[in-house]
Length: 334
Image 1 (cartoon, rainbow, N blue to C red):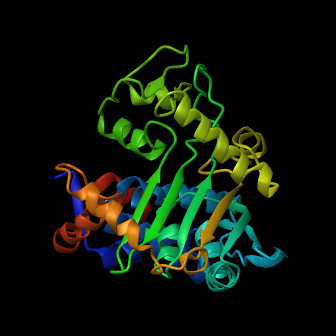
Image 2 (image 1 turned 90 degrees about the vertical axis):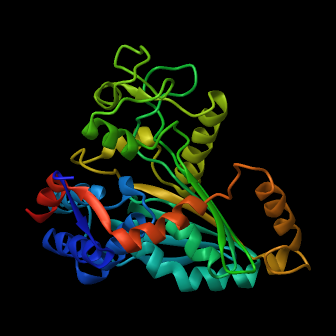
Image 3 (image 1 turned 180 degrees about the vertical axis):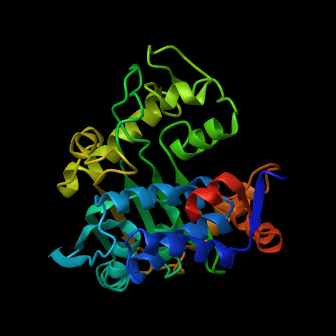
């Protein structure tokens, strides 16, 4: 296609790092962010890949986000690791806490990482998969700014409020999901608006509260809707409480009130809980009867395990590269 350009994964990482350093990141922060951008493109998750770089760059250049952040760690209880992200993007906090948090979970059997004073702009699955690669079960969630109406309402109150979960398997593979509690991730709505594609029914309302299939109407004064009606709405509320008040951090509505420039994400927290299966039961480390569940799922035609789609896309990306709009490449290279 003449309006796109194809990059290999190495070029994706170099492009991201260069743009981030130019915007004010030091090498440690640039590499940490570029790694999660690279992972997203590797797995075909374009809404969290290079598509996010202009937002990262704008927030760094405005001075809102600290591109030279040095996270601080503190044990505030036997099973709680408090992480002050020093006003940076969360990938550098994940790198700073990784070894200490894994050791804490394995020592205590379970532990909470209370990540505060950060800006979360990436997918959630990289951090839960990082923990599961070390044999741990992990759950993570974070809020955003008000973009989603609660069930029965028409005005934004919650963020898209994603929730991620990862389970390790004895063969080294992982069962992972990362889902917005909104019917669609905001980045995917933005990409549909960019590409001129409509939304399915039930995904959003316009500024008058009327149902709409126009992504621009949702993005410009409208509101996204939760998946599954009240069920998704209640999960979004749970995320607000776990990633906000529980950690002494902002609710989505407070994040917007305190946002300095409205560009990219606002400051908030991330709730990250992990368990060591070896400490919670006497069976195999990843749970023998978990495999029975997975086998039963896969016996049904059309069923796949969470995360399989991303893994399958890796082979295609490795062979054919990442295709992005030329306009995005030109925006990043400015």
